[in-house]
Length: 186
Image (cartoon, rainbow, N blue to C red; front, side, top):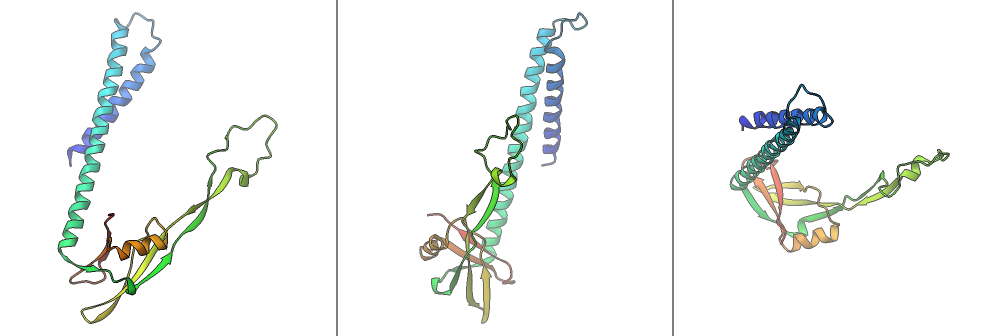
């Protein structure tokens, strides 16, 4: 993990040297640098090597982060109590919302003489569907309330997933305030 920033720096440095070399040697006609075509080709190869080093380091760092997250989830699962959800103890909520986003279909190039485009002409409303639920249960003789994360589907679909037991609740054995809902897509 310590060598990854060095590899990323090296890859970025090689890319920068390559870009500078390509711009300097692209139209070079002088006599100071012999075989400038070979140097030009070398800077391209250097850039490809730099890109490969950079992207492999980034990919390796992403894989290490995913491994770390998976280890933490597995540790949490082993140190927690799994609770199969009871549909009758769930209260389903709709978390959908509408937001204004830039219209991707409008051409950003303005024609000469047309400067009266309003800001409302450049945005469209986008509907995002979300839902979540609140689960009530009695754990160790205490009434508990657990709020799920937001799921990217409507509340009817969420109800179906709960009925099909695709969502489980994991609660820490020692601190019931530490919990998470695990969604397993069937």
